[in-house]
Image 1 (cartoon, helix red, strand yellow):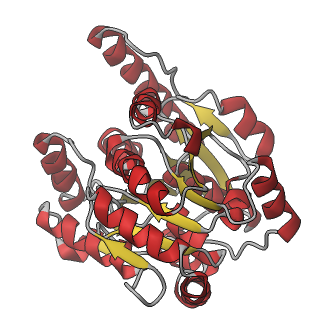
Image 2 (tube, one colour):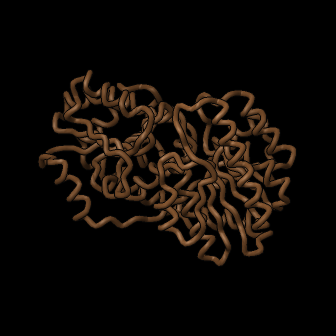
Length: 374
């Protein structure tokens, strides 16, 4: 269990299927962020942590923990006799698909949400083999680009179904956005730059922080806010100090009010090195924010450069700075791109369309039970 786009989507879909009368269980192999009780209190269906998360333990202990989780999952599958299972991550696919096949679950749907940097080749090949031989009845790719990645990894094209992520159309009261800016003590001519995502290497925050000195030379009243937690937080904080911009960078941690921050931002930035179909980007665009994003994964399928946002090469702080400054210093351009972004999300990435596509995959064999696995 962790706060991230895949986990958020998992719980949104589980809630929707539960409302349709399906008996749903959401299971996670571990509870990294100690969210089990909070999520169980929030949702009306079982939310299970199959194992405990511990840092800096031996490989033997980790193996034992995984075996315990697999045992609990298999017992759960046999007891509940699920008719469908939807798996959300590569690692969960490697662990859960063989068990689901052995347990006799008829519909077993895996997911590909973008290339994982540093994933061992043997895991990539094993994942493809498991899909191809029928341990999975289908694979969901979250974008056309991810579909192509899947084919390049060796997965047969006929096994792949493209279902882009969808988002609600949020309506954030202006006073909540104003409260965010007031809490930052932003001057009237100040700017808020926001990025939301786990503080991991593949999210590229290091390049965004490196872009800030150039931004501040032209927009000295700008503040960069990073919403999310992760292993690189300490490193990024040290980076901001070494660049002497620490007073202009806010580390927000995990936020339940991240949509308020998006509504308050002048520009939303996605500086990722690798992506599939990022929910945070879709949410910011649905709120009418002007966005700057890197040209990776499925992002160009959402952001059309110069039409509803700006695209830049990955790992390029100078390009990030230039694009961000262009938007900060041209308010009419910010407004135009933001309006176009909102319209595009309404037309192409509405959440109900995504739900119906998943239902078409899962419901032909539903008997009022399903299982959602991270």
